[in-house]
Length: 150
Image 1 (cartoon, rainbow, N blue to C red):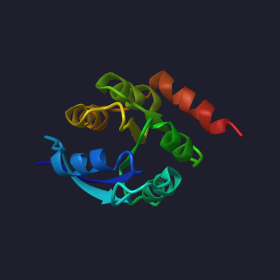
Image 2 (spheres, one colour):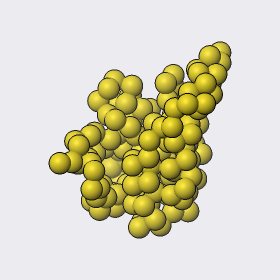
Image 3 (tube, rainbow, N blue to C red):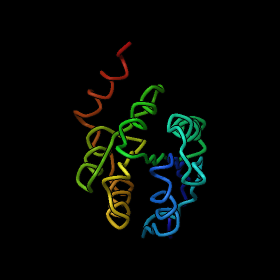
């Protein structure tokens, strides 16, 4: 039986079409995903911080298991998301980076560069990230070190 999870989702105008594709096409053998779409809702020019903040708030308010953000390069979304305490956002452009970001760094916000990732590749990246697990062990010490930064 699949585990039900909620995932927050946010994109600006450059990530809009990829966001919509992922919502419609992503399937998992392990998860039944309810997408909590925080916009953008069309491809008209928009500002990524608005959507990153809305998606991150879903995660911080325990309304989502994780978040997926998309913009042209992914950099702006990652910078915005990482401004929030308890958020670990990383840009991933392939399956290996996505998997390692979760395994080694316990990333809870996956950010993809919509201008550089194809539709089917994006589905594989999301799957790789979702199905990965944090390794704990020595990696927990590093997370604690990051959390101690002021």
